[in-house]
Image (tube, rainbow, N blue to C red; front, side, top):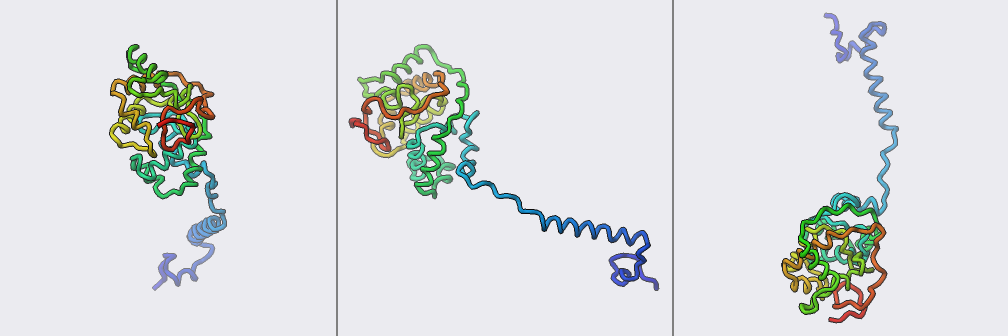
Length: 258
């Protein structure tokens, strides 16, 4: 019985006529496969991404984008004072602030690494996005301006500028700027302080101030802040212009009174 001409039949491999057309059809795929395997074996491995701090904090930018996103849940952190950012990372890690994603991200990071992350973002100064129109009456905006610039001494509410700087761009090393923040974010943070969902190192000055503000006060302050244009060159002040009106945990003592 003649051998089958199927190339998978072992005896026929040796009986094949090299001049037969199907002999070359059999060898060509084998040569191509061998060439591909050799190329794959000899090709250099893909280069690993650079081990830089910018690469390591890339996941942060999924929410805290340098430009284009600045809302109630994911505020701008670029350009905030290093000490403030460091304190907030500690607050999330240690449970004084509650947001599951942030707790997961920083829960096991040591303090020197948190300090590096804070310094990285403090050094970033991308342009501010354009502020959306603010729905507020002239009376509400005026009330907000008075609280921000003058406070309300009768209710022991200090002016925002007394701590956050005359330009409201923050004060190094640990007081954040208020300019460029979305109105919803400011409202949400005051609500968190009032409800004790957000805390800071004792004495928690912002929790005390929030407790003295009415909902109308908060709406007026957030509306006025959101309506202000932002100077692209704004930077945190190097130090407070005067003693702070009250002590705040996490802020170096500049002579503030209790």
